[in-house]
Image (tube, rainbow, N blue to C red; front, side, top):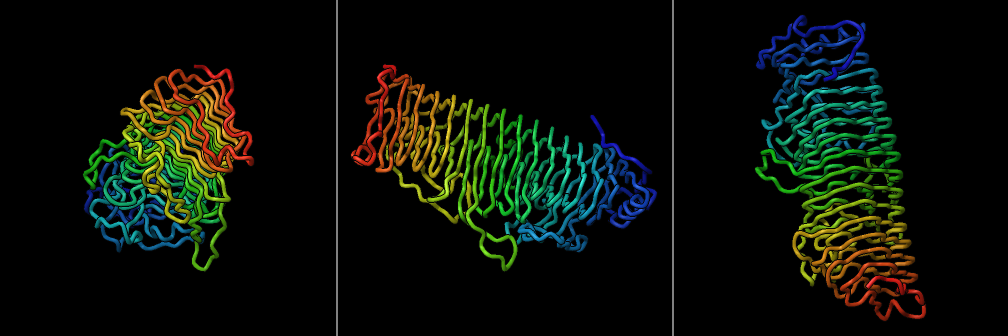
Amino acid sequence: MMTLEFRGAAHNIRDHGAAGDGATLETEAIQAAIDACAATGGAVVMPPGRYLSGTLFMRSNVTLHLCRGATLLGSTDLKDFPPVRPALRAFVDNYSDKSLIYGENLENIGIGGEGVIDGQGGLYERKIRPLDVRPMILRFVTCRRLRVENVTLQHSPIHLQWYLGCEELWIQGVRGFNHCNFQNDFLSFDGCRDVIVRDCIGDSDDDGITLKSSSDRACENIAISNCNISTICNALKFGTESSGGFRNISVNNLVVRQTVQENFRQTHKPGLAGIAMSVVDGAELDGVTISNVVMRGCYTPFYLRLADRGRPYTEGMAKPPVGSLRNVNISNVIAVGAEQFASSITGIPGHPVENVSLSNINITCRGGGPREDREVDVPELIDRYPDCHKFGKLPAYGFFCRHVRGLRLDNVQLNTQAPDARHGFYGEDIEDLSLDRVSFPAACGQPIKLKDVRRAAVRGCTVPGPVETFVKVEGERSCHVVVTENHLSQAGDHVETTADATSSTCPSAGVVDPFTAG
């Protein structure tokens, strides 16, 4: 295994008075080693042993190196964690002002080695609120050229690691286990740029890898690859804080699974969304590509949400305008064990999600949805906190899409473990829709319903068993819907159009190509 390289002198914390017995508070000794190292640059070496500490303040040009067999233990006395409010104002100020390891306005810093940093978070009172009484393990603000490699981080009282407004980050080979308290996220980037994350394994009670923007700084130019994430929440999440936005982000080779570890809740419920994007506090999400993902045990594979919670990130600030969510490409995904919450891509009236492409997707849902849910009225929830289950019952088992402009599904396979009488794809208020080579299970009710959809093409789709109607088109705004070259051997009707969809204002609704396969 690679270890973090450093230049300069090595400062052993034992030479500065650290005992390593796990009982003596070592904050002063370790801080003395860090300060001495900062004068020349180099590494602070933590040899095998157990070192109890309060807040440690990192310095520029210093690497904290934990040898194999070394464990840094967070104190359980809050007096050992002085509150620190950084100069960069952000909504994350409401989460925590305490840290085990803290750095602000630093450069050329690192944390590495094969040791363990343990926050002992299970010894803190378990309460959702207030948050700021519990320290994070790692918190870095407006730092540059920061590397965290190979260490094990575990049992944080709150978020495991949080990077705010940092640049040129390299996170590699980090192992995280965080199941001892509420808000136990694994890895959070907040308004960071020029970031590489690779080869990490995280198992958390809250979100896995999270990109946030709780200030006016965007998360941008980020590459994430070769990670294994277990969670009972969202595995890969953008938001909910979106004040500065998200741009130019690539994610590749991600394994997502339901946690099998015991945790303080004593439950192994499925995770929420495998991939979640929530732009609800203004700004934009633009330019995200995600590929080669395997997920098992999530409520829903995809949750893309543009809404208008409009939460300011500092007190006295005006409510931000509605943001945007556009130019997202997701490909090569296998999702098994999805619950009854369909994948959803939703904007709000007048503010559509734009230009989303999903290709080479294979989803196996639990199924079992009743026929009466096919016509359920789904609330808009424009200003509510976004999560995949907030809509409640949905009229689809595969995809529920509403207020979208430019949506393409290509080579998508939908499967159900039990018959489901709902729609495979439900689309409402969509402009420019393409459903190419979408296959639906034999035991399904009505594969496709389109309501107020303009300029849609349904091509090369497959339904192997009997269905009442392949495509149902309704809504007085529906027009220019083309259904062609599909494989429908046992469909009762290829296309059903309601009276409002075939009015004189919508003359092109429901065009059926004569070459549709029978």
